[in-house]
Image: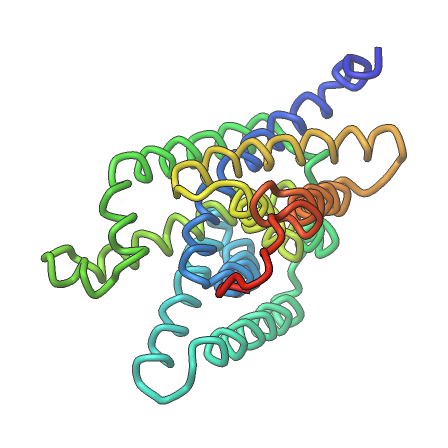
Length: 282
C-alpha cells in the first residue's frame, strides 16, 4: 500500500518519528516569534549554532550543548546591541546573523572540521538514529512541559511586556527562558530540515494557523497539526519522487500557507468578506 510501503524500512520509520517530533515542537514555539513579530530572530539563532557545532566537535563534547550555547549567545548579542545603541532590532539581528555565520565558516576551516556541511545546512532526516530520536524526544518533552507550566506568564509577556513588568513578573527571566525554548526547538528541527530551512518549520505552520484562528493556544495546536502533516507529507514525497527530504518538507509547509492565504474564511484573498459600499473600514 502507498502509506505502508515506506514503513518497511527502519530508516523511514525513524525519519517519520523525527518528522513528527519536529513538526510538533517547532510550530508551538514558533508561535511566540510570530505574535512578537520576531520571526527573523529564529533565523538568527538557526545560523548562529554553526560556531557552537564546530567547536563542540573539535573538543569532542556534546554537539547539542555547543549548538545551544552558541544559539543563546546570538540572542544576547542581539539584545546587547539593541539596548546599548540606537540600532533597531532588525539591523541588530541582521548583523548578528551574518557575523555568527561567518565565524562558523571561519572556524570550520581553521579547525578542519569533519562536519558534513550539506547535511547540516539542508538536514539529514533519513539519517536519524535511535539515539538522535531519544534526544529529540527528551528535548521536546522538556520544552512542551515548560510551555505548559508557564503558559500564562509567557502569554502575558508576549502581548504586554510593560504590563507584565508592572505586574511584577520577571520579564528578563521570561525573555531568556523563551530564547532558550526557541533555541532548543531549532536544534530539534535542524535534524529534519537543516540550518537553512528550519525557520520554515518554525514559523511556516504557525503563520498558516495565524490566518485561520485567533487565540494563541489555538495557533499552537493547529500549527502543530500543520507541522506534523507537512513533515509526513514531505517525507512521503521524498520517498516516492526521490526528492531531498528537507526541501520537500519546507515546500509542503509553504503550500499549506498558500492555501490558507487564498481560502481562509476570514482572511483569505479569495474568500474574505467583501466590504459593502459606504463601509468606513473599506
